[in-house]
Amino acid sequence: MSTQSKITSVTTSVVRQMKQKKEKITMLTAYDFAMASMLDQSGVDILLVGDSLAMVVLGYESTLPVTMDDMIRHTQAVARGTKRAMVIGDMPFMSYQSSVEKAVENAGRFLKEGMAHGVKLEGGEEVAEVTRRMTSSGIPVMAHLGLTPQSVHQLGGYKVQGKEAKAAQKIVRDAKILQEAGAFSLVLECVPAGLAKDITESLEIPTIGIGAGVHCDGQVLVVNDMLGLFERFTPKFVKKYANLNVEIKTSVQQYVQEVRAGQFPGPEHSF
Image (cartoon, rainbow, N blue to C red; front, top):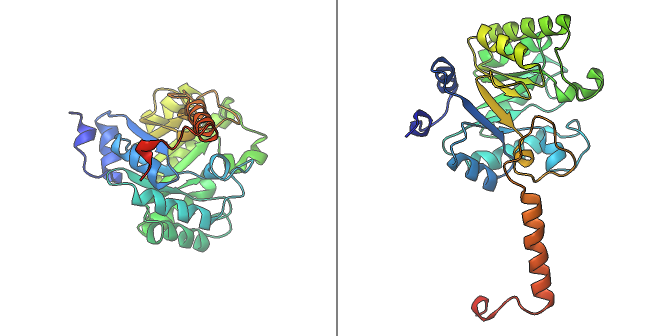
């Protein structure tokens, strides 16, 4: 039996210990009770109620339109389906950028109303004070550097960050600033593997990569991507562990055919 399977509840101290013991951290997104329950029972350490909810569940073209109320409602559902994993609520666009006070208030909603164990927010030095205030208020913060989807228009699209020396140095500097501000972990998205390795080795807090190579302390994927549920596009860094989109369509098509042919319901399905 692995050490992870013996853990009754994943906490910030547990993920820090996992880094020290060189035990890889697993994280997936979840948006509803049923999926959260399955992922939790399968041993995933952290469930992120990602603002990717906007695209893979609500059908928007980007993460930007999702609201705090959207995020809280889905975080509640995930929390109700979770017994072991840590639940992290993703702070949506403009829920923490306008003022420190508003940011702390919104983060508090994730814990009070959403029953989350912490929040994630994008950005570097510019969110250090927000991170500091949240953590001093008792709200665990997961930081996020590299490709930050909420800033996709400013970044000029979805592309690898930190390839140039100056950009890489900024990410390294921001990572250390966020650690000093109290973040308990750091997501690195779409950065070169070598840069992610250097950051991981330089920090005391764990790094969780997505498109950032094998050297991070853990990995995260959007569950709809890795299960083959989301058809619109598949990022290069995603490995599809299943193609449920095809399986679901096949099953539904069979149902439709059987109903139309009078084959379902049969005697065994009737009272």
